[in-house]
Image (cartoon, rainbow, N blue to C red; front, side, top):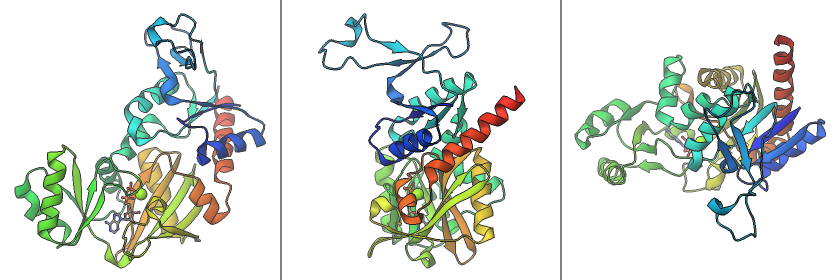
Length: 316
Ligand SMILES: Nc1ncnc2c1ncn2[C@@H]1O[C@H](COP(=O)(O)OP(=O)(O)O)[C@@H](O)[C@H]1O
Ligand SMILES: [Mg+2]
């Protein structure tokens, strides 16, 4: 197969591991900088058209518009693995859609990426699918704070940016005043946030599960460092491998399925009411979980694409 990895940086662990895993299994693979892809719409009807990669005119010191010889080529790939950073979600989605329109397989559909990036939409999708999530309220007017607190329970509460990642924008507000102040500040910056019940009984622990196709291929428990409630490894959390019970496993699979996501990282928190889904990540980091569990997550992802490709060829 020819596999394209959409990534801004081919030195990242996850990107390198995916390249390695693809090569080990005999595939041709190339890393394509998502922002180097140019989309052309309505220009050609042939399949595989409409996507070009513009090689950067390095060291030439010339300006873009003045480059008649900027090299372009069409990446003829059978499958893509989108690793779209939060800062380029919008353009990344455009690129993934264009590949989809050309019938290229993907580990994450554009719609699935969009739905999981928006934490609020993601919670709505999971709740609608009958899956357990923490009590959550969204407010715009400060006057609605009282109603929100009544809905999710008394402080402490978690205030969360709808578009945050890696634990940034997840704040523990210990009382009314802090909650109101945080929300007001976010509002001033035009950032939408949600208010969520604080699952204190988790004591800074959560579970990260990697789903690939219809299987949970790796799972770890993350433990936040002292004085921190966020278990993200980027926040200094430590990880231990775990074996999932079947309820948690089914929950992770159902969450991925509800978003239409083939490959994803699912965050689950253990509450008194049982496991609750926190969020779904469409470009989960591979380093922490491979290191903690010793599992070949990159290999599983490539193997998934092989199965999809075989199925597609069978159908053609
Ligand atoms: N409602 C909550 N109660 C307790 N801890 C939480 C809650 N929500 C998030 N956390 C902690 O904060 C971390 C980051 O939250 P998450 O929703 O996964 O956002 P991010 O996209 O930044 O990872 C979680 O991994 C978990 O440890
Ligand atoms: Mg998370």
